[in-house]
Length: 290
Image 1 (cartoon, helix red, strand yellow):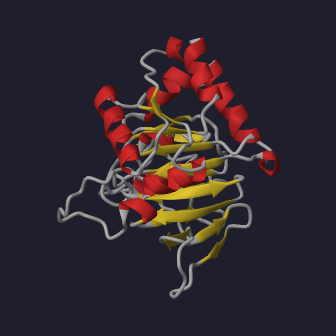
Image 2 (cartoon, one colour):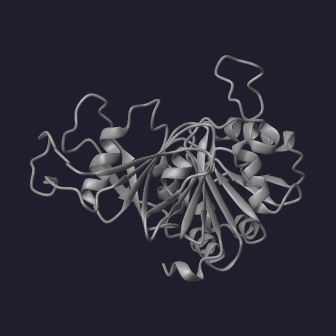
Image 3 (cartoon, helix red, strand yellow):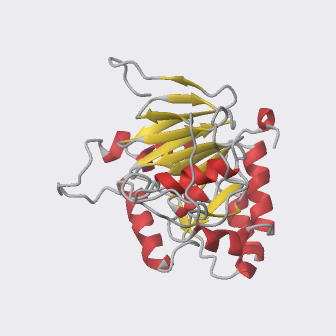
C-alpha cells in the first residue's frame, strides 16, 4: 500500500482496555476513562460523540455479550451513534445492509477473541474491500483490541506461545487484514509473556517491525507513517534489521533459536515512533499529552 495516499487511522489496542467499570478495584489504572482512556481516543479520532461507530465482535465466542460491553462503554463516554454488526458467517460480510453500515460509518471497533475468526469471516470479502478503500481514501478509523489489533497487519500472528524458551515453531503466522504492512502486532504482551513469539515473528520477517502491546495500551497510527502511544502500559518495539545469528530459516522445528543485536525500545504514553525511519520522539517529562 502506498502510505502517502492513506488518509485513515489505525488504533490497535493490547486488550483489557478500561471500559469505565473498574470501580476502584486494585487493578484500576491511573488514567481517567473520560479524557484519557483508550476508548476516549477512539471516539476523538472518529470525530466526536456523534460519530457513527460500528462494533464488530467477530473474533469473540460470546459476541452478543462482548458487543453489549462496548455499547455500554461508549455510552458512558456520551456517544450517541453506536451500532453492533454481528458477523457470524462469512456470508454476513456480503449482506448489502451490513456493507451499507460500514459505508456510512466513521469508525469500526473490532473486539478481542481469536484473530483467525476475523480473517476467516471477512478477509477478501466485499466488506473487507470496502474497509480498505475507506481507510485509504477517508479519515476512517479502524480500532481493534487484542485479536482485533493483531489482525490489522499483513503478516499476522495466528497463535502459539512459550514463556520459558525461545524455539523455532513458537509462533504460528497467517495472513491478516492488511491494513498496515510494516508492523507485526502482538497483544497482552507483558501479562502473557509473549516475548518469544514476537521475536520469532520478526526473525521470520526481519524487514518488519514487531510491536508488543501491554493491556490498556494502544497506538494511534496515522497515514501508516507514525504511531503515538496511548494508554497506561508499555509498548515494546523490536527492530531486527541489524540482528545477527538469526538462523530461523534453516533451523529445524523445535530447535533453540538465537537472535543477537535486536534493537528493542520500551515506549510509554505520548511517545512517538516514525515507522519509515524507525526514529523515536519521547514525550518530555513536563509535557502534556495531546
